[in-house]
Length: 334
Ligand SMILES: Cc1cc2nc3c(=O)[nH]c(=O)nc-3n(C[C@H](O)[C@H](O)[C@H](O)COP(=O)(O)OP(=O)(O)OC[C@H]3O[C@@H](n4cnc5c(N)ncnc54)[C@H](O)[C@@H]3O)c2cc1C
Ligand code: SF4
Image (tube, rainbow, N blue to C red):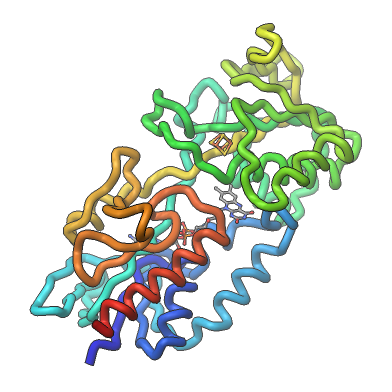
């Protein structure tokens, strides 16, 4: 009777939630707005902290999702509740009748061009963490010829000016991982990380940080970059304040990598409205009882999974996806 579940979003959270639901005997529909599954995981090359291949990880997740029914290039248009069922209309006019819904629509990478002072989209030598990840993945050799490279932490995170007070959690460790990978490809490069605090909270993260200093000689400068400009030779002149010594700094670099953070999706409000749930001040979807339950919402039968509720690492995302599947099962077996 109550065996059909809709998962909105076909990223890691949506796929793993579907996998768990299928193993519990449910029929699962996944609505994905892009043309392929995998969300942001599809864009990464090697995962922190151990360097595991992102595409192998995605393949393993997808191997188990064979029985899920995917709708690609599709979004949810309307949701109506009739008795205890949800009647869903998709953008291709398909109608689905399901007993429960899991929202797993993830996050948006902060658009670095909004921080004009860093020169993204203006200077060729300024790229983002996602651009560099793409460079690793597609072996863009010309990207790894720079002799002086800087990583700017907290781009679009912990920043009142862009209305993102939150810490994006994954970008300190991503910067350290990418800095080490850069040195592997260009051992002669001088590499700097400009940070506010280093948040290396996870298992294996501190070891990676120590390796970055001791094995790779990466220089960590505590200070926020205030301005980036290009000199007559086409090099990047980066101004910052070293907040440990309280001295202004000027460094000339060939490549600057902006660590764009994890921001809310623009359509979170629309999804929240359709489902009678709320968003937080930062725009991520709200959890009424975040301490006791990290996937429950105020609407019966509607659950959340992964980074749609805030920045998360992949293992955290996958654990939440499994928890959301169990919550659906508990709800439908009540
Ligand atoms: C630069 C960077 C590097 C990272 N590297 C690592 C790493 O090395 N290791 C690690 O553990 N974590 C890493 N992470 C974190 C990791 O990417 C996330 O934990 C993971 O992607 C979250 O998965 P998700 O499914 O919640 O969201 P997403 O990956 O964002 O997937 C959401 C999916 O939902 C779809 N969607 C969105 N809106 C809709 C809609 N309205 N309708 C239908 N579909 C929709 C999207 O198209 C997407 O496919 C990194 C993050 C960043 C920013
Ligand atoms: S994880 Fe690090 S770089 Fe990312 S927002 Fe937090 S402090 Fe800044």
